[in-house]
Image 1 (cartoon, rainbow, N blue to C red):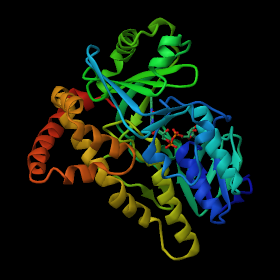
Image 2 (tube, helix red, strand yellow):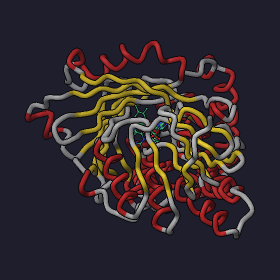
Image 3 (cartoon, rainbow, N blue to C red):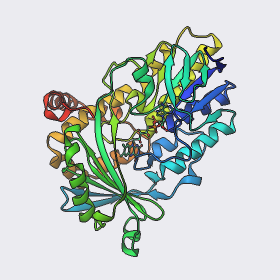
Length: 396
Ligand SMILES: Cc1cc2nc3c(=O)[nH]c(=O)nc-3n(C[C@H](O)[C@H](O)[C@H](O)COP(=O)(O)OP(=O)(O)OC[C@H]3O[C@@H](n4cnc5c(N)ncnc54)[C@H](O)[C@@H]3O)c2cc1C
């Protein structure tokens, strides 16, 4: 016998940065919102926990209560050998831990009226009815799928699995004084060793998160590469704790982000930046756009959620397109670009302005002037090679 479904204006599946942002915007506008997550909160998630200043600017509240470090310096290492560092006169990013960030963002959504239920795994979805693994049934005219890289909603609707990059990370827990000082306001990047990705050191209050990612074909090598990188950075590779691998879903251009009255946001939509692997920003921005389209639909001012797809195509996809090109170019031959970053103040400043949200990949590309044609051609060549390379043959 079927169970009575509880009705809501919107059900949001998944309470990462995407889901809690959608719930925040919807509830603040007066919608009756159910935010679900299968995990008990606070929960951790494989993630470096780096939040760019451009992302902080998207949020209507401050992340200061969960900020552990403020970053002004990038220390870049090439192929695990020589390194250089650049300092900027303003903050570039903050470092947090996902267990703290996600709990805090959920609290903001609850604070404006969203109903949050953790430990509530969605088992199935049929049109606008959601069944939880405990058998409870909920329904809503709009569903926001914010259930991450391996989400149930995509599967339930029969949508193709997203391809993606792979990453592995761990924590170097006890920092001696030297390491504490070295990483107090700096992040480390390792370029040139990982095809399709890079390594990182992201400092927290009492430990550093050390990780690396790359093309799926690199998956079998991740463990060994992480040990080598950790050792080069003077961490005890054997002592890395909480080792976790995960994949970063990357959108195929033109793929659907709306299916009936379901809108996909963040990792569930594959909106990770392919060049940087940064995904919190687009999770938040896409959730805001989805919430806007959902409110219009609920108010009867639009017939469906297609406005959300259009807003992604105009606001986020152009940057993703350039990021794909830059990623393809960079990984064809990283050395000249690392040298450019090392030696050119203009290039470093352009990078910082993008990270701070004062510029974007698309405006950077536009500033290349006529050279853009050459860059487009080279990137097209590199992308075509990348697509046929073994790199993308295995999806995780
Ligand atoms: C190793 C690694 C390092 C990274 N480092 C960074 C970084 O430093 N900075 C950055 O910006 N990005 C980083 N990213 C990317 C970033 O983690 C993601 O892009 C971001 O978490 C996406 O947010 P989201 O809200 O879309 O999904 P998620 O944060 O993945 O949240 C999805 C939520 O859905 C829930 N869920 C899943 N299935 C169900 C279900 N059936 N029922 C109910 N709930 C469900 C999950 O429990 C989860 O809480 C990293 C990724 C990896 C893998």
